[in-house]
Amino acid sequence: MPRPKIDADECSACGICVDNCPNGVLDLNDEVAFITNEEACDACGTCAEECPMEAIEIEDE
Ligand code: SF4
Ligand code: SF4
Image (spheres, rainbow, N blue to C red):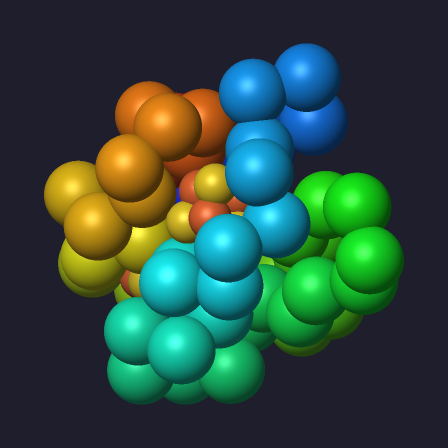
């Protein structure tokens, strides 16, 4: 199952990935984006492409 991996050290909490995920997989707190609905990820890669910090990778597990 694909899984977005967020590097918390790189994430600036801009929220772009949350806004652009078509499946509502991601959410945001004051400091970092996090995965809230991993099962819904279809590995489209949009979050990784849109992240200005290159903080997301999509891993196949
Ligand atoms: S787009 Fe990147 S930097 Fe912005 S909240 Fe998402 S993971 Fe963090
Ligand atoms: S790969 Fe696509 S579906 Fe998965 S978290 Fe990123 S934007 Fe959402």
